[in-house]
Length: 225
Image (cartoon, rainbow, N blue to C red; front, top):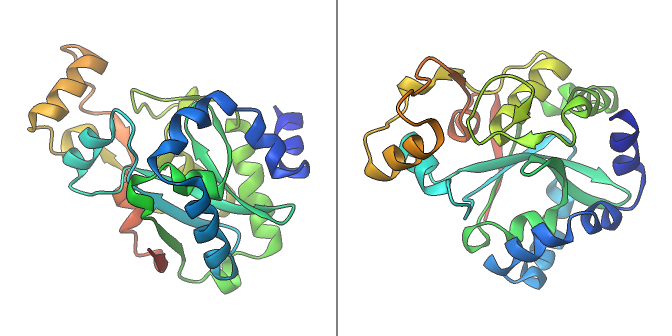
């Protein structure tokens, strides 16, 4: 696993992207990839390693997440710069690095928000960024967690962020909750829950939602476009 992480962070970003062509061919039609590249070049000067990025995913479960959490933001990742290109460390299938322009292209309408630690100037030193990357390394390549469990066997997007920052910097970004605390009343949410869990809902399962991270007082908004 260590070698895979090392290669992804040393080789050109295009190589990491090329490793998953089938997945990206399915996801990119949501927005012009060219428009996403332009947006990426425009915002690049305002980004820094360790930023967090949020958008509205168009995945099959996105609507249920939005309804249950009362937020449009259903997917998130960590921004890193590698070999001159911005990428997003994210939990999809599998956990991996994705070129930022490709990540933006997958979101609804190209809208995204970038947030940053409020004390990033002192907290996100080069050494701290190395610790963040080291904390994420063991999860690289893990399968996406459709069941939102709290073990490291499978990982979902906001869980990845929470664990990387907690383990790498001892920073807890967002409030941990139990599944029972979310709004599970909407038929679309109930249908997705039944599909995933059947009749035995893990209501006491520890969960961290994208909106909990989004609303964390540890963060400030850098970009909203």
